Image (spheres, each protein chain N blue to C red):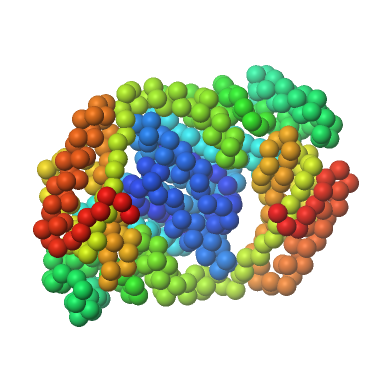
Length: 270
Length: 270
């Protein structure tokens, strides 16, 4: 199974105005579906930056790229410009996308609580996609998502408004990732240790990792160094969830015994 | 003034277990200090991935790279391996770093509430830095930060534990960024608009951006499309804060007038 990457577009992320909850949500969903996220790249609302990040991702060994943000009607929504540039394709009004945008605006006009819904240039902009794109229906907003298949890879662009991103993901991307995952499922669990420093835990993790090569074990310090409190996170991806859970249990009880022998305490909850 | 980039290291970020609050905090602080963050890259605990991301950043036109995460004592703390690899340098015990690590462990031993503090291999690991590194004192934890000057750029590595990252940043990195910013300050403000769609706001932003070329104006949809609520964010970086604030005020009142003319309402608070 090949990997996916996420590209987040938006100056608000680079000035630290907005926390990148979109990438977090996408990474969580993809992981839970059994797909591995290998990299997240955040760039600003700049055609060259978006194009460059997209080109770099296209040159890596991966299956799917999800780009979020920058699909809206304003001048600085430049994601499709950047992607078109990276793929050396032109932006062109997609009849299918235009139909989706028109339907939305007719619905808003019927609702009657908004200004007259003309198909102004900013609205037309949301239907201008890189040649060869397929628009993805936006169940709760106007800007459609975009799917482009190129060079054996699939490029997906989703709006940055979290609810719209999630809605398009669930309708159009989740089935795609489920197929990529090919039956793999992600399984994870944590235990919590007190009274042992991370540097004393390190050789114990080495033992458990050696004995359980399919389990990834990682410690996360949560207390202060004079008063250590550690989360130890166990995870694996497997086609057989029951076996995977048994493997996790085995690794968790092995490390629990080792921690106790070394004077630490183990809890199953934080 | 040149740009900076952030590289965040950690599988927990790529599986969507942990929200990348470190990059958000760093981006905010750097921006407030007048420095521009151009890219954030998130990679996993993998020497090749870290090395590759570092090499790519070193090849871009920037002044400073801040890497967070992966400096701890465990086997999968691989950041310094990756950086050494990218710079084609060897990892070597730094006497200065060893002194910092020893001092910490002697202090913990004196405090007496922990296991015997031997300088075990996992603890020695925190003093093994790429050749030519300068360790940065960690005021609240063991793993020192690292500074490497190479190819006209400065590479900083900070621990992933948020409090340790922040403490080293404030002691050792903030003065560095302040110098880079060379007196530039970031100024920003927001207004909120109701009853106007983002696609109707778009041409108004174009007018204001044209009239106020030094001000960056960006709309952030916050409501639903049938009931639009928009944040409009204004920002600029300037050596003269007072002039910058006046420029912001001018742009904000210009767009407020335009929104009202187009049937929308403007508020100064959300």
